[in-house]
Length: 441
Image (cartoon, rainbow, N blue to C red; front, side, top):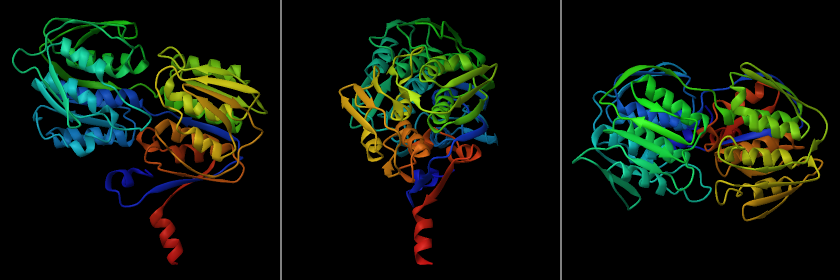
């Protein structure tokens, strides 16, 4: 996988080289959901016995979490590229590799898992993409309500509930937080008594985590609504679970097909999870046909303007905001995009401007004047979804686009280059070592 070696070892950096202007035709399969996998893998720490997890995406974030569990003493065995067996029976409460934990946002799920398993935890503050501050105040509020004592100092989170253990509680989240909802669910699975989480997030990966926990013997009810109830159990047992398809990966390829034109069949999806994305693309003049486990995206000609506001599920996802902005750069007229979830998520706009996009940002609002075409340029993937956005722009642009910092992209997209190549895109991955070798020759 292009970029993984550079992320782990730092020996060389990889780049994508894209020659745009080719419409996309063909079909592809969506991988397992990143946002579900990065919570389910840490949750396996709570299980006594073997967890067989299927449809794990082959991405660096999942790989790092599996490495973290392995270095903590878990037995991790790859059955095939997308299936892993994890046995955390002999896991130690200490020994987590902090150099890996600090690189990923999902490190905070280990707080809830380690509290539930050992009664204490030490993790790094969440890392990952660099689009603004990642507060964990709602995580701390929820875990504190369960009886944990938590302190943040020196870039680490220290948590302890060793004396009395975690005890179920009623928790109202001050703001809808996917991460906090999932962390509380993990910790409360083995807490004594009932935990009620109100104003809970409702994303598909929250339901997936609840289904995973329940398949291992937990009692989680109401996931997918704004009130989740967790009745603590004494023990979680091993079992087999299959992760849902990735809503955002599917949406990214839908956006790519809309922007580049052509006809793409996207398989292994849950169309209901894509409703908000499909509706917005249809508003832009794109044909989207739904089937039981697939969508077909078809578009020719100029796109229509649209206004987009990101919101918690079932609203338009914030993780699709950069991609839809890239598409709207080519739409006729003026579009307005409002970011309703995160602050400072428009860093990538400067990269799109290098390619000829006309975008003005004011706080959480981006005003986009559509242009007839974009022009290839050297750009940087500022974060995971921003990286997907500049790739989409490169697929449409005239000339060559070179995307740097692609390790961000490969945190969450399995074989992006290969999948786009299968649709006829002219995209390849090169490394600095390749460029050096060519220069020497």
